Amino acid sequence: MELDRALEAYASVASWRAGLQEQWGGDPLAEDPHRLESLAGFCAYTGLDPDALVAFCFLRKRETKERFVSVARRAELAAKLAAWVAERALPARESRQLSADVLSFLIHNGVMMNAGVARGSAGGQPA
Amino acid sequence: MIFMELRSVLGGRRSIRFFDPDRPVERAKIQRILEAMRIASCAVNAHWLRAVVVNRAEIPAATLEALKTPVAGLVQELAPVHIYCYLDAGVVTRMKGARLKELVDVGALNPTHGWSHRFVDEFVYPQILEPMTKSPGYLVSSAFDCGGAGTQGLLVAVDEGLGACWTAFNPVPAKELLGIPDDWVPLYCLNLGYSLESKEAGGQRPRPAFEELYFEGRVGKPFARDPEVVSELEKTGMLQTPAPLPGRREEVRALARRLALPE
View 1 (cartoon, rainbow over the protein chains, first blue to last red):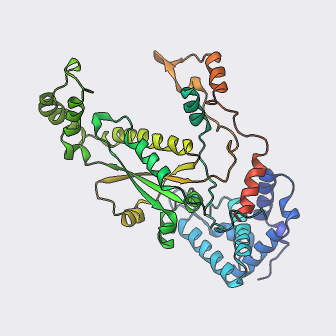
View 2 (view 1 turned 180 degrees about the vertical axis):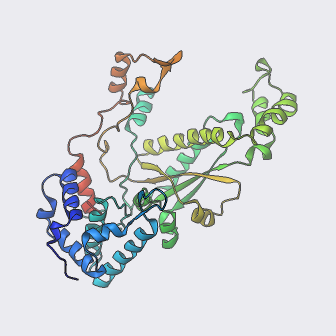
View 3 (view 1 turned 135 degrees about the vertical axis):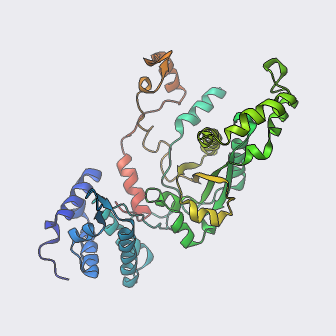
């Protein structure tokens, strides 16, 4: 899928950047380019641009039009993420990092997602 | 000295959210936690709290996923031990005052305060306890007791050098996994393990102002907080440096990277 503009020009990516800056200081998207690469890869896999990925997780209540995170949509996206990561057939830690990058994007856009755990590596050095 | 130890346990407790997922918890420590729950103060000696200990590694992967809640999933995934806590709503009508009479027998409840076996059989059970089980507030008051017992276990976990965090859980898969009787009410899960966070875990968490919570004589008149008492509690470790401590963000970031978690 071809994006119609640079990844960083999407509002959701700007939100992600702002969230990361507020949380950790600096400019994590610039410092760790793999984050944007991971998101770009998942966008290509799903055929959705970053804003559409976020929008996919939200629905509106019929009566009040109130916006809410859909459990079913969230689960669907989590399954797609797991499938995409599995398809890449990376070493376990790289797989988890890939997944964590995309989860970070969604979390900073208000879509709560549970991460898996790097079991067996807790005693290792920070990456 | 004993107060100092108790106070530092109270003051050092944090809800720990980063556990070493691969380090098991010694069985003796779990037993001590359960022993502390069992000796908790309890209305009418009913003991509503029930707990089921499960090693997370023994939970089938699909069931563990189903047990997770949106906000606590990672804690459940990381903690090597889960203690699922329930309220046994049927205990009062099963016991019919028998445990109160045990208190009479051992001299905890005495005629000095109006207690006798006959008082329990003819008044307390039929006119107070049995009707209480049908009142709308029954589960609230019994859950209060379960909370007290659970907290005793939580504090022993801290005393044992463990990290701990209460979380909700999805009761449907838990009922099937754990064989929960129909009249047990799901409460919370005590997640246990060795903490990957520093001892201070970022500092004592923000709390509402003392005067906002506690009153003297009448609501609206705050219980006056004596600074000397505050100072003494700071010295004995019950009141500790409030969060955020310097370096907390860095600590969390290092943990995120160690476990490959989202930042």
